[in-house]
Amino acid sequence: MRQLSARDAGFLYSDTSHSNANVTLIQIYDQSTAPGGKVRFKSILAHIESRLAGLPIFRSKLQRVPLDLDHPYWVDDPNFDLEYHVRHIALPKPGDWRQFCIQASRIHARPLDQNRPLWEIYVVEGLDSLLELPAGSFALLTKIHHAAVEAEGGNRIAMLLHDLTPHALPPAPPKPWFPQRTPGAMELLLRGAVNSVLSPLQLRTPLARRLADNAEAAWTFANDLLARPEQLLATRFNSVVSAHRVFDTRRFMLEEFEAIRGLVPGASVNDAVLAVCGGALRAHLQSLGELPGPSLSAVTPLRLPGRDKPGSSSGSMTWLRVQLGTDEADPVQRLRRVQEQTAAALGPEAAHADPQSVDGSHQAASTLALSSRMQSLLSLGNVRRSPAAACTITNVAGPSAPLYLNGARMTYFSAIMPIADGMGLVIAVTSYDGRIIISPTSCRELLPDPEAFTQRLRDSFQEYLALARAPRPAAAAAKPARSARPRASARGAASPASPKARRASTAPRAARAGRPRSAAPAG
Image (cartoon, rainbow, N blue to C red; front, top):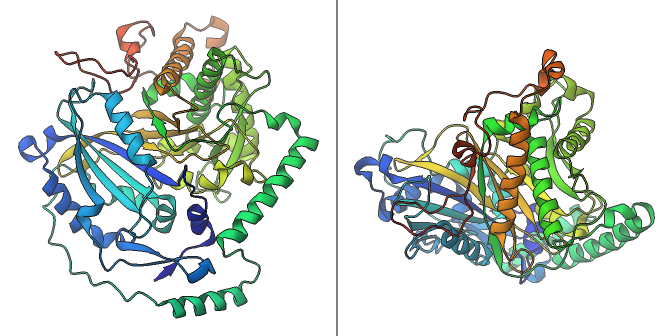
């Protein structure tokens, strides 16, 4: 039996009837690499069962203290039923990307049953019409509450099911498991009384935390109004969210983002991603006639360099409010403004660091480590540590090597993130197998056409890529700055207007071989 920390319990207390702290990892697999070219649901079920011993949180449920006088506990679920948590569905024909995004968004939006372990896995078949992904692909949607992610760590959850080779040994028989005794109400009350005496200043009840959050929100609003009125810029995404979610994605080549960062000396891949997102946000709000005059900002995580070794990325994680340059028409100037802010936050040590070393796309870190405190930032009631912003842009660092599930090779990795009142747009930036995947999450009322937004992500990226590939003046080419020199793109020097460049950013979409096209925009 383990008690939830105050932060983990805060994720639970933040759940409302129209928003919750669910995180959904999305992985798509090519089953042609599996033995026999087919992966069956019963083999996936057996595979998961064989690895449950490595992740106790999968068999743990919440045990609340009577009257919520203390934080809940994780206890063994005596009625644990694996087949309740692992479910099997299929898309109807034609099985295109638009259908998949709608289904994934609906699954993500549904709250988890807090009387059971806080996770579900959906095996989704019928993905037969996705361009650039083989016909017959299947997906895994792993939905887990943020409190459970924090309890065990995202890396263990992500690596639980996967192998580094398609020829892994067959799953071993599951080890016998016997649930421990669940404590009674009187025992929990006594524990709560002891904790209250030992930690009298901690807010250990949901009501106390909500009162504190409301007081903090009032203080922050007054402080911003009097001292920083420029931070009160609000967009459609800074309002109450509905219970309906939307999700879409675009995939880009990592090498092409490295070329883009070369437009500004010292810029990192993360800087380039932020600038591309800023261009998309600018174009989207401009098309709606809702673009404010001053620049909008995003809240984003930043890993500080380690103090023990210059240039290392083993330092602490911080949250940074970055102006995205949405008031800037020149994309290079937009990237420069982003780079100046992140460089100032990193301090003098950043001058000795490889700009890539602070990028989640180059770290084999925990899959959800960079979003560990996201939920506490999603509400405007928690902006004393992080000022109000138009959106959150967070890294979800993916594996650096190809992964396999029952021999099927993972071809796509992304995430649907939690949103909340006051922060209705969260953009997840994932990385896997030489690609960067940018995936916005919002609600249906605030972003009724997610494909339009991801099309603007693609347009912003192509605008930067065209500048990065343009011939450089002879004077500038004579003495290039080391950090500004773009690497050669994996797709060569083709113009962005060429078919090769048009494939640089893609959402998985419908195949051409006699199948209906997907509603997803062309890459």
